[in-house]
Each structure stands twice: as C-alpha cells, then as structure tokens.
Length: 265
Image (tube, rainbow, N blue to C red; front, side):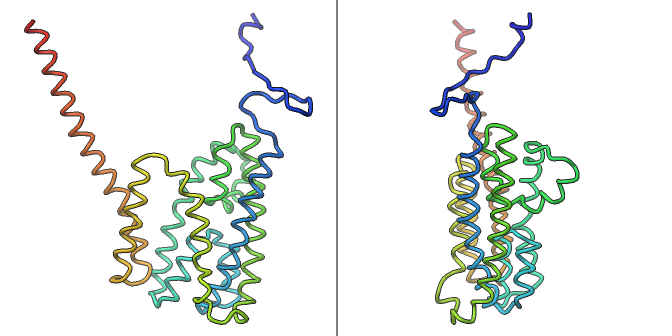
C-alpha cells in the first residue's frame, strides 16, 4: 500500500552526477538570476541620487527616501513632481498610490514564502517589483526564498549605496536634466514589467494608463496625471465586461435558436 500512495518523483541526472527532482531548480541558478536583477537595478540608484539632489532635496532627505521608502518608481515620482513645482501633498499622494501595488505583491508573497512571524516585518521592506518578479516564477518554496532574499539584499544594499554616491556627485555633474538620468529607473522597471503583461486585459490597461499620463501631463499639475492613470484599470475592466456580456448574450441566443430548431425536427 505504501508503494501505491507514495508520490512519484521524476528525476534528471545532471552532469555532476547528483539528481534533481522534476520541477526544481539549482540554488546556483536562482542566485545567479537574483544577482543579475539586484545588480542591474541597484546601480540605477545613482540616477535617483542625482535626480533627487538636483530637485533640491538634501543629502539626508535623499538617503532617507531610499532607506525608508525603497521603491524606485515612487521615489522618482515624488522628486520629479517636486522638481516640476508640484504641490508637496500631491507629489506625496502620487508616490503613495504608486507604492500601494507593493501591498498586493505582499499578499501573494506571504503565502508563497511562508516566513516566520519575526521575519515578516523585515521582509516587507523588500517587497517591490524586482523581488516579486524573481520570486513568483520559482518552482519551489526553497527557490522562492533564495530568490527573494538574494534579490532584496543585493538591491537594497546597492540602491542605497549608489543613491549616496549619486547625491554626493550631483554637483560635479552640473545640469542633471541634461544627462537624462531620471529615465534610467523607469526604463529598468518597464523592462521587468513588459514580460509580465501576458493577457490582453493587462496590455490594454497598461497602454491606456500610458496614454492618460501623456495626455494629461501638459494640462494638469505634476503628480496628478499619475494618480488619474489608475482609472485605466476600472475603465478597461468595465469595457471588457460589457464586451463579454454582449458576446455571451449572442452566444446564448444562438444556442437557444439551435435548440428550438432541433425541437422542431
């Protein structure tokens, strides 16, 4: 009976001679992927440091944002809105709403990682786009924990270090706007986000959000277009729901017509 109830585990023989269960991933491969993302994105903290200092924030304020907020999109949105002369409260609101997405990431990652209660407050600081992107595709809980930890640690350390260097070196660079460094982190974020937009609904929502921001940017105060771009999600969901409802109604009517024709025969 034990032989009948024991789960079957297919194994593959790697070149080194050890075996790996099907669906698992070598720890070294997870670490390599995590380091790649952590280093690539962490270095763009330099761009934030330069941009923040160029926007008028002090060295202490700039470093505090990276240490405490630690979500690049929100940080860039905040300093960008302030640099454009936006209201500080509007700038903070835009940064806040951009950061809300991390709470939804946390709901999924908490189930996947199942960390001890004592570690959860510390791990929450690392729940961002990049750690989520590395953690979710992992095939096992062990791989997910390794990916999350290595990505979070590497990115947090590098992001804060390069933020400090960027803020200190802002004066040496002169006109920071001429370098276009504020586009570095959004470009990396889009590169990570694009492969995750797999469904039609997700792609349409992202495209509409971009159009809303570009269209409203010239006519509204800095920071407000980012807030209003969130309207793309309910609008797309509403339109998609109506389209499916009409399509479903047509299919049901057609099916009813076929049934009546069959009954007539």
